Length: 167
Image (cartoon, rainbow, N blue to C red; front, side, top):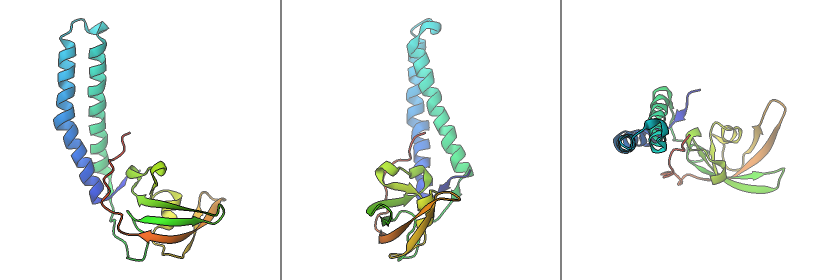
């Protein structure tokens, strides 16, 4: 499945790739070179650990480059009175009689423990485009769902500084 990314997501991923290529790669190669100089490679734990770190960095670079190559760029703009990407939304859960605040983000920034939910999640999909006061049905699967009410939308929650989560 192709990732949905905003221009800001693309910029952050490009910055991480550049950092990993210019800084982390250089450090990893030095660590391998230094560990190799310690002698017998078959019993050299430092060498194997350094190679593992180097390979992990190279794998991350390939993953991010592939993500950029296959990504679908989406807009984070929405109408002033509608829920959109990078907006904080206060939602009332009728069944639980509870109110929660979430920020709608792209899937690579999602972290439900931190109050950031993906626009590709059932709740995120359901909330997009709705206005304050709307009752929204969140479909979990073909036979289950629940209703929420949009209480408040905060449009001034952009400029997110969190990093792209590591896989």
